Image (tube, rainbow, N blue to C red):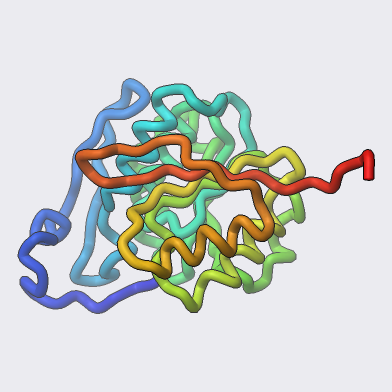
Amino acid sequence: MALVPYVENAVPALSKLQNSSARFHFASHDILIAQDWRKLGVAAVVWDAAVVLCMYLELGHVDLKGKVSIELGAGTGLVGIVAALLGAKVTITDRKCALDFLSTNVKANLPSDLQQSAVVSELSWGEDLARFPAGGFELVLGADIVYLEDTFVPLIQTLQHLCADAAVVLLACRIRYERDSTFLNMLRGHFTVQEVFYEKNRDIHIYKAWKQLPRSDL
């Protein structure tokens, strides 16, 4: 996830994001997420897309029990935390500068018996992908990670590397600009993409993607 500098009162609508923490209740657990907009910008606040993706996971649309999963651009780690609480084995990733903050949230919100279910790791899209097993993940999660055009190609490269043949990608986002639709069209060049959920009040879409496998009958 890209970082932006903090600007005091730059956008009044974002004032709630400047709170030092945000509380949630998912998977029968109270979750307290620390936020630090001043220090890390967008990487250190909980965005609506993360909340909606957690709602979707909690509804049971995906079987998370024992699922080998990875979250991209995790920011505060809310989605990865909820996935772990629901039974997944999650690698929660972001850029190096966000890892200490991310690790603190993960450790603070997982009970001791689930601490081993979540690992925090550095991942800049398209870089050093060999550190992660090719095709090593059954589920890839991303909340509000589609907004910088320069990241589109490395993000797709990363998805291609991480996904097992039968893997599912879940991306939660707003469609704000033409570039967001452009990314979805790029993704369709490599994956089958389907909208599976829309939360009207927050204007958040969830897209499911899976690999386009070669047909054996050709």
